[in-house]
Amino acid sequence: MRKDRHQQMYQQMLKAIVEHQLPPGLRLPEDRLATTFEISRTGVRKVLQRLALEKFVTIEPNKGAHVSEPSVEEAIQVIDSRIMLEPLLLEAVIAHWNESAKCRLQQLIDVEHQARHADDLAEQIDLTAQFHIELASLSGNQVMADFVQQLAYRSSLVVAVYGSRRSVGCDCGDHQELLTLLDEQQVAPSIQWMRGHLQAIKASLNFATSHDRDVDFTRIFTPLS
Image (cartoon, rainbow, N blue to C red; front, top):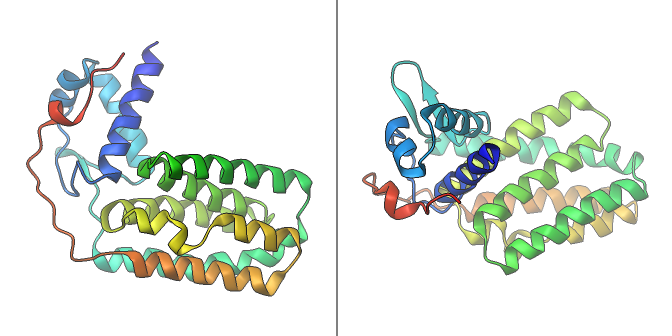
């Protein structure tokens, strides 16, 4: 039951960060969050550490935690790194392609479509990252796959801060299109699709966004069951 409550808190926190209810740079005091969610500070700390691992939260010694705040320069570098790296893996992905790989990616796409229809932005951002991480793992190059995983998590924060529903919507390309190209063993079109997909995500970002840093946690979060 305790794990379920921690998972609920994690999901609420992630959703609030992605939907800009908790703005970048906002301090996340353990005592206030413990009171809001009615769980121990130890439990709060575990959730914050999980969010920090995924780059959504930054924890500093003697200062506590705050919502991560990627600079515009960092955001651009993260997406540009993905544009350079991910298309290069697709030839190896196709070389390792099989029915099992296709089924794993199709399952992620199906859930991603469900999240889109439910207008769940937080879930869409998470599933988009998971798709790219899974795709990179199919290349057989674990070192490169680890790089993609780190970049995908950092990219999720970038989209959460500077993006919108357009950043994970069909305007930037549906992953189903890429799956078709991979299944047809079309290397060059797959590379072209991926590069265009990531460039469209970059173009969708709004770096003029401003945020209110004074929030009421009790207004944002619902009681845990």
